[in-house]
Length: 357
Image 1 (tube, rainbow, N blue to C red):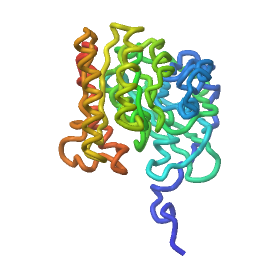
Image 2 (tube, rainbow, N blue to C red; image 1 turned 90 degrees about the horizontal axis):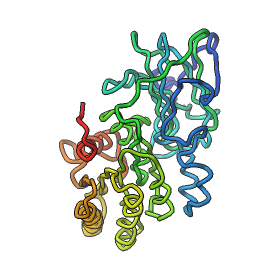
Image 3 (cartoon, rainbow, N blue to C red; image 1 turned 60 degrees about the vertical axis):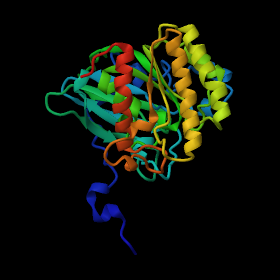
Image 4 (cartoon, helix red, strand yellow; image 1 turned 120 degrees about the vertical axis):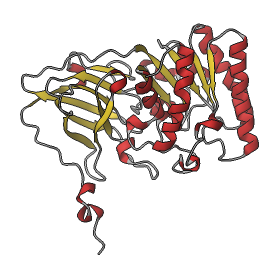
């Protein structure tokens, strides 16, 4: 009988949780000084649960409980802490690793100096639990955790060593979040870990808070969703709605009105309009027609005095290995997300009047 890979290469064995002795555990919401962003306060939902009944899309109402874009930040003297996270669904995807769909990753540092240092992931079988001790590099005491992209969280507990109390994290340069709206690509499919979704990358590149409102297969420009977004406090809006429109007429009928509802409520809001990055996948005629719809929305915004930039999806995967940016011709891999972040971040920085690191 063929051996399992974990018996051949120990680097592929399931993560062993280190001993939990000596840590004081509390639910995430009970730790003073721990900052949670990207979720409605006190919940693991990306939309206010009280507003969900007003959203007509059942898909959006379900996907709102996926924690894409949820982050946890704090400083911990000594750089040691423990995470226990119970997943809501525990589902698998054939083209996305569980480290991205159901895992979390940890960055250390602050400002423009945040660097990846650890990741926790669910086992390939067994209880839907993600748990383990994190030890930050020597001298580091600030942590940023990205929550799962394609799963929900039932419960999350943080443990700190006995006698250690978490301290407030360094504020972002931009504390009001940048809100991203779009499809599965915006949600993070199919990044290898949560911090590699392009909204998370841009957040670290610009040192800004962010909120991920990507809804896999269900971003269709509904006015009710636009009205919800229009009521959010935000520093900028990245409008990545293209892929989930059933056809060109649908996109043409909904794209500009969705944007207009948001700008009517927040006329000074900086916006970046993005067209699909996998531009060379599918029908060239359809892709060009969709791009033209988005470009017309951008030109309308500019002509009417709004602060707007256009990120041309046709150029986002350009450069060496441009054909290697997806896992399936559509959903970006980590290379694709890196190219997206590199292409969208400058447009966002310009429209917000920010310098980059």
